[in-house]
View (tube, rainbow over the protein chains, first blue to last red):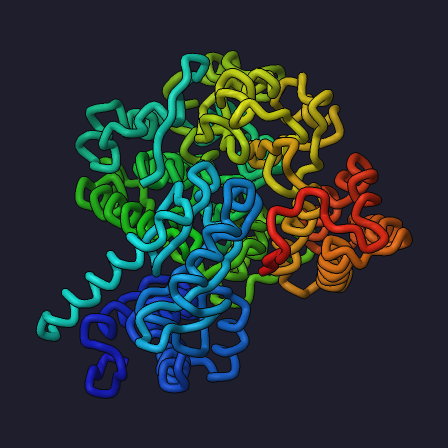
Length: 173
Length: 435
């Protein structure tokens, strides 16, 4: 799919997906990265995303859904602009992950997999992030933050609220 | 950014370029990088394999299989292309060493992959990183682009007639994909479900071609083995366990971190000296020696050398060398529940003993920890775990069952203290959060 006008993605992403499809010995190997990069831009795997990725790979939408449903990072419904993932695994648990998670719940007023009313934040408890020696850790979208305490939470949230404000003021590229 | 730590007992081989800016290719070259692969280009593949064999390098992913032997299983002649696969799906709770390799020394992974390719006669390698490591993938991608620009990757690497290409690849969240055959399925764009073995990947792997798949730490170690020489590298470790290991020490210690220590280093000393002992001067209750799938050890069991053989003799496993330290304020029932919750979440569902076993174990332990356990539950947990062992395509079922059996065996009294509606003796607050 090189005709960009047919794509629901930005020209930049469409070009990236074109390159992905061409780089592997077998085209289908591009499926999982394609879904993840598409999700990064659109926010989730909407019907339109599934449809376009299926066409790009040359498999059915059912096959795409069958694969996507296996991977915990791929999702079929939207999350907040900043998706806060609090590690729940043992090394983080030993160093206060539960208390950290409760503080996020309290400050955001949302439960597991909830989204704030302004759409800015969502919250999820996830399994091991590979940050065990710097516990407890979180990932906000793809950004790791380590060695946190419940008292770190207000600053983290304020930081992202500020970022959203700055981004909101910038004209769209 | 993850903090780097240091201790005088460390022998820095794999981590020697950490914190030195070696993610930049020019700095990596300044620090002696890409010398090992140049040396290998002047040698026969058999020489490379014999060096790796003689170094006693064993797989750093967890199983500890001798790397040189694994490479030697790849047939010389093959109708289908051969591949090198670097496993960077680091997901075993407690383990965060590959994280530092990708961050600080991505060119060591590239160099190691090229050497593996020369050894088995592959022209294409893949570096697979877990999806959560996006920032690290970008570092890796930049390093690969630099290596192409210098002519270290491509159709004529280092000006020779040898071809080697590398493709970086992101996963999208799955522990199971760290299992070698599941990783190949995932890389082929499918659900990460394991394949039945045999055939082993060395014969039928990625796209049906002979494939060498190694953990990222193993691959990053390879150039150092070539540089130091096999004998010198082997001499650093203990018998049949060459070199060093990146130990991820986490949990209730004063100075958690990733420390590079010789194979066979004493576990007790590692906790008490290197990591500064149990946090806050508390008493030690238990140690998980090699990632959360390895059976727990009691304080009286930790005066052992940390290599594959000695930890095995002590009834556990060195695994991914992730040492998780637990103090006396920790509820082992909750610890067992959190461990099994992980495996229940990550079981791919293909093999029934694992899918159903992890689910029932989680359900039983959740009820048990909430104070609704019955005496029969303890035996049931054991029965369930015993019946998962060895009955699945891949080791995930065993990985869930083994620690569970050890928790019941070594902390049965603590399980009994939760019976008859009694509240958890360690409860910090009324509600337990379960994923």
